[in-house]
Figure 1 (cartoon, rainbow, N blue to C red):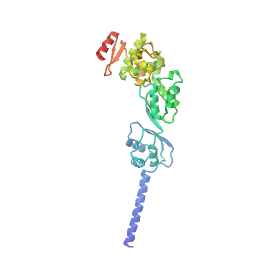
Figure 2: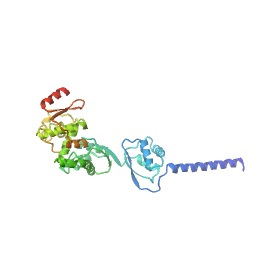
Figure 3: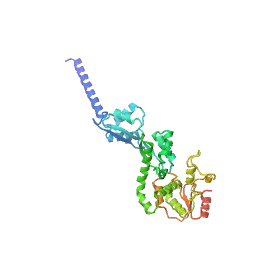
Figure 4: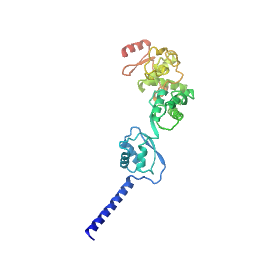
Length: 328
């Protein structure tokens, strides 16, 4: 055999080795983990970066290699960021197909609802995250959440939700109400024991949520508001009047003016005694809890200074002194 034939055989053998190695590399890293598998939900948590998402894909068995997925993702669309949410993928998909789906919009979106918002503000957050039109948002406010007087406000629980983008607005409302019911169950027995209607608890909590500078203030504010109610005093709180006034161009919770205090409304608690007709915000668990477990106090008045620290007073004269001391 001549030198040329030897060289030719070496090249052929080398090519075969390269092809075999490439095949093993592909099937080892880029091919589907399983031959057949059903679609599953893969969740990318809020706050995850791409590396964490890629490692989660490998750990849960959707790809054989996080590195291979990263390669496929960047080759498909350089600079693509993996959005938090939920995706439908299968362990029978190869890494290219998984990368295609994960680089698209998730079919379930994270929605974060802060404590103390009114329904219109929640609707705006839902619309932004779920892609609602202005008409859908308007209907959610005026139709999907008004079927029962007890569910007009206050029961759209502030939390972090993972919601399908195609979920009906009515079902989204039910989802938030069911979360409220789930969270309120531990306190419902105490409400019954104290002979307090659950609607009263939510009305009070909605006021406390807006009036408190922090959750640490809530038990004290609760104790003061209960004192005023028991003495048949007006609550004199801005938040209920803000709810009646609405957004006049400066936001839903803009400061109250002297003119605002003349508004004729059952929500004007500078004029009317007792609680408002319905909650004025959607309170969190700390506010709900504070209604049932108020701090014992002799105070009837309170204010927050510029650093949000609370100061209470037993008499109106002491309250005026606090105003001079902390607000002037």
